[in-house]
Amino acid sequence: MNKELEHSFIELLEEHQNIVHKVCRLYTNNYDAHNDLFQEITIQLWKAYPKFRGDSKFSTWMYRVGLNTAITLYRKSKRRVKTQEFDAVQFKIKAEDYDNTEEQQLKLLYEAVYQLDDINKALVFLYLEDKNYKEISDTLGISEVNARVKMNRVKTKLKTILNP
Amino acid sequence: MDELELLKKHWKTTTDSDQKLSAKQLYPMLLKKSSSIVKTLFYISIAELVFWILINFLPMLSSSYLKELDQIYGNNLAIVLLSVVTFSVVIVFVYLLYKAYKNISITDNTKQLMASILKTRKIVKYYVIYNLSMIFLSVPISLYFTSQNDSELHDKIIHFTTSQTIVFYLITFVLTGICVLIFWLFYKLIYGILLKRLNKNYLELKKLEM
Image 1 (cartoon, rainbow over the protein chains, first blue to last red):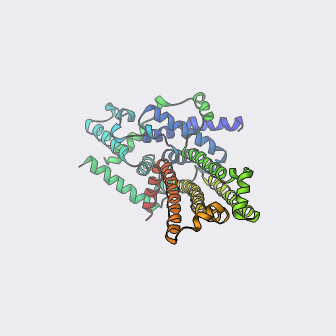
Image 2: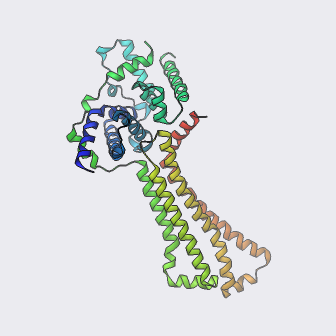
Image 3: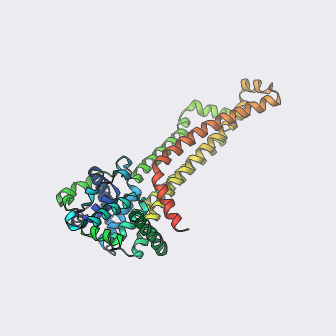
C-alpha cells in the first residue's frame, strides 16, 4: 500500500475515531478489551479502505465496518462484556449536568442497553447516532419495517426497565 | 423527557476525548495482525484440507502400499480412477473454498456478512462429510476385496457360517461407524465453540425477517 493511501486513511480515522470508540464502549467493558476491539476495527477498516470509493461518507462506511467487526468478527470472548460488570464510570455521566432523577435514569438506561443482545445493541447504537430507519436497515441487512418494529420493542423494553 | 431522548442527548454529548489517539499512535495499528474469526476459520479450513489431502495421498507415495492395492483390486485402472476422482474432488473443494473466502466482505451488511462466513463453513463441512463417508464405505469394501484376494483371509472367511459372516461385516460396519462418529463430534465441537455467537446473531437477524 502506498504512503499516500496510508496518510489519507490515518487522517480520516483520526478525525472520525469517536465512532469507533463508541462502538467499543458499547461492546466491551474494560480498557483492555476496548483497545483490543479498537485495534481490530482499525485493521478491518484499513484492509477494506482500498475499496472505499467515496460514494458514501467515510463515517457511514465506518459505522458498517465497526459494527460488523464488533458483532461478527471480534472473538476475544474472555474480555467480552458480562452484564453484571456494567461500569457507569465508563459512560461518563457527569452529576453536574443532570439532576438526581436524570442521573439515576441514565445509569439504569445504560445498564439496560448493556444487557441487550448484540443485534439489539447495534439497533440502539445506530438510533442514538441519529441514523434513520433506512440507514439502520441497510447496515444490518433487515427490512425497514422490521427495523422499526424491533426498535419499538427495544424502546418498550427500556421503558419497562425504568418504570417497572 | 422520553427515556431514549435523554439517553440520546447524553450519548451525543459524550466524547472519548481521554481515549483520543493521535496519528502517531494510529500508524502502528495498521501493521498489527488481525485476530478475527474469519482468519481463524481460514486457518482451520486450510488445516482440514491439508489433513485430508495427506490422508488421501500420503499412502500413494509408498510403493508397497501401491503393490498391495494392485493385489487387492487386481488391476491398475481402479487405482488410477480412484486417484483421479479423489484429486478432482480436492480441486473442486479448494476452488469453492477460495471463492467463498473471496466473497466475505466486511463492507457487506451484517446479515450478508454472517451468511458469507457461514457458507464458507458449510463448504468445509461438506468436504469433511465427503471424507467421512468415503472412510465409512471404503473400509467394508476394501475388506471384501481383501478377503477375495488374500488367500489366508479368504480361507478363514470361507469357513464362516452365514450368521458368522453377517456378524463379521456388522462389527466392521459398527466399528467404522464409531470412528467416523467420533471424528464428526470432534469437528462439530470445534466449529460449535468458534461460531456459537455468530450463529446466534445470524438466527436473531433471520428471525426478524419471518
